[in-house]
Length: 177
Image (tube, rainbow, N blue to C red):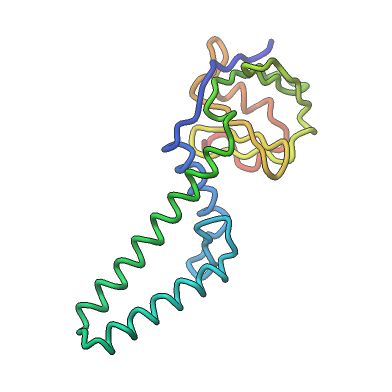
């Protein structure tokens, strides 16, 4: 019997949380680089370091004290966080499909995605990657595109466990979801 998933959309807050969780999974060690955007991490780090050092030098030459340097460092840190948020916002806007209601029908053979433009069937082997993140299941059809299936919207009589049992090769056990 097919499992129905009610229509859902992804808010920007959820989108940001999902992708931050993915970043934490990709770079679990503190020593590993943690890119904040789609830009090259090393190039971005160099730009920020040059700006920070040059602004600290200018502050020092202008007769500034340690407080001026702390304020400058704080401003650059806040700018970095704002830039990261801007990158997430840009990525969210580039995927208009996440903002439209999408429902799913899950079967042992694959999954049917129902969007405003129609329905499309995918075999499980058609997916590049299937990744659970929080209460979402990310179904990647390519490196650049994925569908967001909300595991909390599984329609009765089916349960989340029933849905996860149909997924071949899920990277984490269902009990961790």
